[in-house]
Image (cartoon, rainbow over all chains, first blue to last red; front, side, top):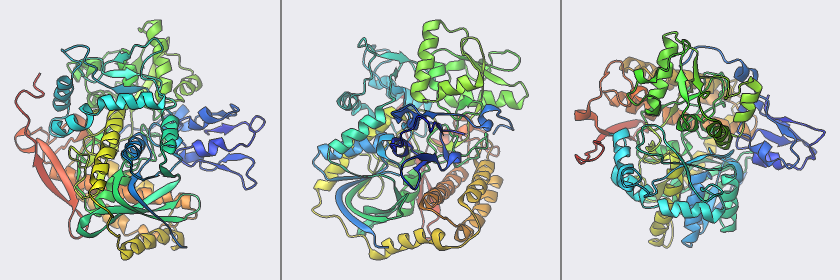
Length: 73
Length: 564
């Protein structure tokens, strides 16, 4: 489920929160750790990963992307 | 809660490429400028994560690399939707300024050796696409706009435009996506630059935000302009592309431009069955080919890059990641190596959009980027003649300059009526206080199903009437939608706009009693293209009840245009 934040590497700077065009990422109440508040609204655009100064973000695609199925249009 | 109040010369709604270019031009002309965007402008809109292609004629070859050649292609490929006189003034006249703008903000269109890397696709007569690394286009533009002194309202969701006496657009009301704080902005002129309309159709992957174009672009500007009384045009057309199956990513242009082929499940290179230009045909023909092969059970359909030489492949993989940063991750996680493997593809979700890369849909603009209401200007993908990065930049520059010209004529802007402000604020309170039992997600799901059934690749009067009746019922359900957070209220505001856009799309599609541009408007009850009666635009504007009323506006082309 994208994005995935490596808490060992993340310094809690909050850059990712401001870099998401879909308002998916939030800082926790203490303001020291980001979390993925709205995973279903991720566009997989990679903006957060590009901006993360620590390289702490990985994009992991959801199952619907890995095994697409169903009728087309 | 009291609302924050601001006054400015120019209000720009939407801080994507078009809006930020308009803001820069407005500031260069000496205007005070307010920019509002649903996200933070350094990473908002369709190019948030990057982009890799810019369409330009560079006058290197009289046979194809000229203004006349571009206009000729525009007419040939979007006959009945494009107005070449408007395109000439907005795009062709402003192309040199657009290329200077890239240099000014520090984003190179040239390769490191000083040359342009150019590719060709979609039936264009030459390699007009300039391939470049646009991964930092938005951060660079955002910084330039702040340095130019524009007042930026990040995370500010626009609820509606304000309209003063004589139907003059004079500002907007918005709310902060996190805090809910409301803002009333009075302006002498407004540039609407909110992008296209996505999340209108069911996403075939089951993930509503897994879209080809930005899922935050939800027809907000078109819907607000329509509610304010402005006309829309070209909104009947369905736009789709071919994406890696499961992944709503752009990239078809790069793949086709570098020479990739579509093949079906029995190994056939099938595109010549659908277009004489084969893989170099228009995008909608590629979609039609893929969809038809799948429906005939000759799938899966793949994109095949294995024949490309290594330099081309290296360039392709790099440029795909400029256009969609996570494309490489997708290939890695799927275990696909384009050198040796086929990549399964499928048609994307639908969106409301113009027929091709050089013609838009939405707010009807004239050659000044002016809408049909005084004080209203539109740029980029939300306006009826502009599409793609090249027209986002040029129309943004043009709209900013033309809005400045308009502003200079007035000492003061009109005062918005307090009752209109209160009506908008009342509507915003509704879902936060309703105690209803329906979530915006349920509402979105039903809305998308209604639209997909009626406005997909097979359309008829029967389908339109069914959808209209269901939309009436859905509109009656609005009071039962409940939002817990202002983030959710933003999402519901987006659906409110999508519903407005859908009504306009439905009305225009019903009005156009012919078929045009392949699957873009394919009516099973009027299957033929009828240039005698329908070569032109359908203008949609609200009637006295607020419902969409259509008027056909024929377009005459000179005999030499678009015939080659």
